[in-house]
Amino acid sequence: MFNLDDIVTLFKEYSMYSIPISILISTIIAILGVVPSIFVTGANIIFFGAFEGFIISLIGEAFGGYISFIIYRLGFKKGAENIKNKHKLLKALVDSEGKKAGILIFEGRLIPFIPSGFVTLAASISNVNGFIFIIATFLGKIPSIALEALVSYDLINIEENFIRLIITLVAVLLLYITLKKYKKE
Image: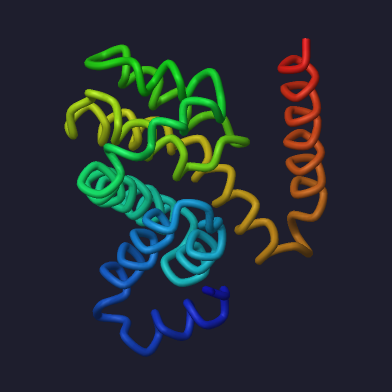
């Protein structure tokens, strides 16, 4: 759907509108629910720089998540009860409200193996309000966007950052294996 070079070219061609374009692309990705956002984060890092790219990616993910939340709430509230069966955390989220729902949304955003769209869909059929959703989403997305930004930056500057990239990828793989093993037990 989106590729890194095309996004960077789009940013260059419409540089005056590059931030809204980035946020629009992030919103489309959030609405789709299962498309990875790493290409947008990578394009943001290339075009805006490491820190600014991280901030724009974070804002785009949070905004996109909120728009998805509203759309899902309008369209899926009635027929989406079966999302509960996907993960224990999603069941707890669907059945929660208020601050507890906010904490569960935050946790869902931290777990890299639950697609973001599932967390948003579960939140949309819960009783959480939009303010708690957006705050929990924003805070919960910080680590994943930071990881995407780091990996993107290291890939872009692979000659200088090859070792750190390998260490980061091995650490993520070990975390995945550990969490998978923990989940089975």
